Amino acid sequence: MTATHGLAGRREWIGLAVLLLPVLVLSMDMGVLFFAVPFISTSLAPSGTQQLWIMDMYSFLLAGFLITMGALGDRIGRRRLLMIGAAGFAGASLFAAWSGSADQLIAARAVLGITGATVMPSTLALIRNMFHDPKQRQVALAAWGGVLTGGATLGPVAGGLLLDHFWWGSAFLIAIPVMALVLVAAPFLLPEYRAPKAGSFDLLGAALSMAAILPVVYGVKTAAVDGWSLLPALALPAGLLIGTAFVLRQRTAAHPLIDLGLFRIRTFSGAITVNTIAMFAMMGFALFTSQYLQLVKGMSPLAASLWALAPSVGVGAAVGLAGALAGKVRPAHLMAGGFLIGAAGFGMMTLVGPDSPLALILVAAGVLAAGSVGTMTLTAEMVVAAAPPEQAGAASATSETAVELGSSLGIALLGAAGAAIYKSRLDGRLPAGLDGDAAKAAHDTLGGAVSVAGQLPGRLGGDLLEVGRTAFTDGMHVAAVVGLVFLLGAAVAAHRLMRHLPVPTAPAGQAGHAGQEQTEPAAV
Image (cartoon, rainbow, N blue to C red; front, side, top):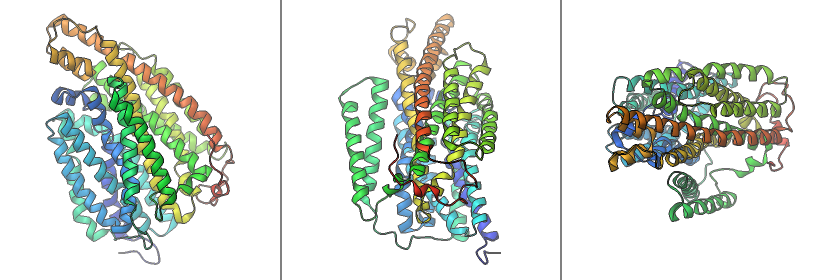
């Protein structure tokens, strides 16, 4: 049975299931390595900077290429781009699983990010093309969003389950059978789609977008972990200058990658800002929580991943409460309140020590996630609802990019702050008698310290663990303070950006594009 009279039929719904599989894998890949960090530290001995790149190279390049690949799909065909990306993602997963060095794993994660960026916007665009009935399309998009969120939750659990039985590279192999299924089924179940008036592809704009992101991130991370030197000092202003050139290019290009006019709509720009900050806070601290459970509390990967699900109780309650209050309270007040709740979670994190009760960090993580996710639920449909109908696709791609970039920046910047404090606290405090390689491994990361301690006799290993775990929690406290200050500022910004919005009187998407009435530049 196929679609008739604008209604999707069996083929379209089966095709939706095929599209949701790579979405699940891509979102799982964001967190599947959280519990593999100690094993990677033992096997590949990465430096502190390399460890951060391993964790967030994937999401940085995914974010950086989303808009570029979305524009490319308009021109060569969404299904074709999806299949190219699926094949590339499977190959990169195989390479990542058997990486023999930290640099190889970073390179594999980079390719995973680039190929993942070909898949994500293609799935969303094909859903819009397959489901023409508004109610059916709403159901399909809700399923897409649910799988994307669920994958981020299942990623660490799947990683923990695999790490409990296999080597760390097994976490990457999940993607291979899924992408193989997509390659087989896509030609039969998914339609091809090209934008009829897409125009020429902006190669210069695509190059500038990537050239702006990576130097800034490299400069911040390298300076925070290894101290200032000439290269990171030059990378920061270079990235900012290139970013300025990218904005100017988008203003003058005949067929830009991003319509900057969307950002003059206050509701749109406000929702993008709120989403970015919320993901910065939530994902930025998830890495600390997973390492604390394993390396400080000594849990197995599976036990740690299951305990890490406990905060989802608070998240579920926050989502329900936000939905219940959405029709009674102004969005600005709800979003500011969500950020204040998240800030309270960061405040609780500053109280967590090596010997603290397990409940303290779980409650703190739950409060932080509840505030962040509760805020994001309010903006999920604002982005598309605020944009003109003909620009809904571009608005969605921009929103996805902001979410990915926010999560990447959170891991990079908060992770860099924690790593810098860890290294500074260990200066001059390592037990005597360690050889050069062992001392460097212990000094770079807590995972390295735990690995070295396991090879030392009695009291010497215990002393190293005590020093390393204390240094790690000190770094976690500093990162939490940074996050706390950031979310307090975000609460003020969210209130100012969204204060023009009244209490909704109809579900998002039914009240018209009210955001279009506010076309002046957003004031932060």
